[in-house]
Length: 165
Image (cartoon, rainbow, N blue to C red; front, side, top):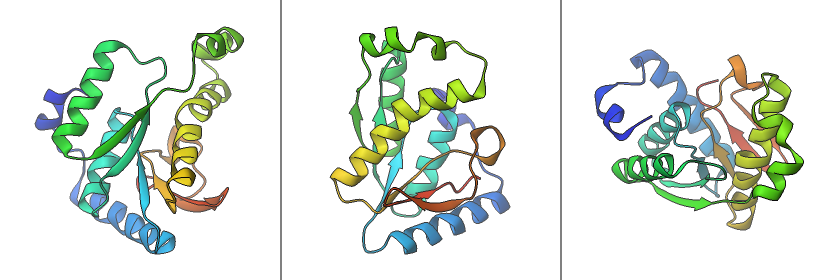
């Protein structure tokens, strides 16, 4: 999602936004007294999650930029700045990791795409959340196409909240 596109779309239907905010409020209550972290990717689903999070009073997030293109990084950061969310950018995967796992990058298999997402984004978010004492995190993941079993659940000591699931 580009910065320009952010101003040209309304990503939510009103009824769907209300449902998503209810899921998010439930997740906030479960994580209390700790806060939820925004798992920000800069993509369209991550952008929707960040918009929802901001409406619920959450403004802190983390983004793993491993293997992002230079222009993509600029756009992701500019979009986060326009949203006025406080995103920490990290990059944990390097070229040695890519050489060892080259088969998953351009695979059409869902298990490989999920593995890459697990290694890159989710691992970064979970480590950051635990290190900084967050109670969980909010994502833009959905049931269709993302293997999300429920809009919210607890795993590895963190609440995972998927308001668009």
